[in-house]
Image (cartoon, rainbow, N blue to C red):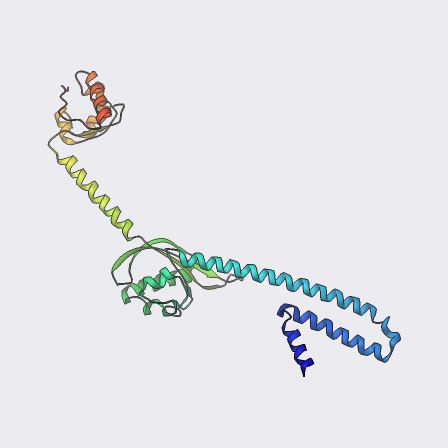
Length: 287
């Protein structure tokens, strides 16, 4: 009884990857033992098979060691990819051809209001979004599936985890197997709401500045340090006898020699600007 338990303990200590070639070698040894026991002179006939068996054993061990190395590298690469995906601020997901989520990183499942990954796996957009948004996302998916072409950097409305409207930048690409068969969709979504708000605020500020610039009754202009005129408003053009700023700028390319009666005043004006950054009450005679 103890001997049988010892054998079981010995076999259980052998790594799983080594068990198959070891059992094959043991089987070959048992056959050789049985044959030589009946006829001791047959050992020479078993020499070649024994050598071939040993070579086969070594080949199998090498192959299994190689496969173990490949599997280990694949696990390491998969773990690295999973860590990267899980810590991306962008939403990353994979869907099958039926629109069901097969993979979802924390940024993705949290964005739809889920409390854990399992809440979104296997679900489609109609189970995760309001009907109007779901229909839009389903149309995007079908476009990728039918055409086999990616959707890149598409700006579109969406909703956050609280149902509030946001803007996103979406990319969806077809997922194919090793035989190039379409098996799903990989998607990446970035929240660009803050960027769009900043862009809109910049646009409004520019419009306000342009309105002040165009409608002011005082002459306003902008030049480069060398005096080249970059912009002028209608009031300045009228002061100098032109109907439009464009006409004035075509005729007067440099303020130093065209606007100032005394050209040295331009140099004095520029020196004060460079010294203090601002200037007020600077009087000059213009022509």
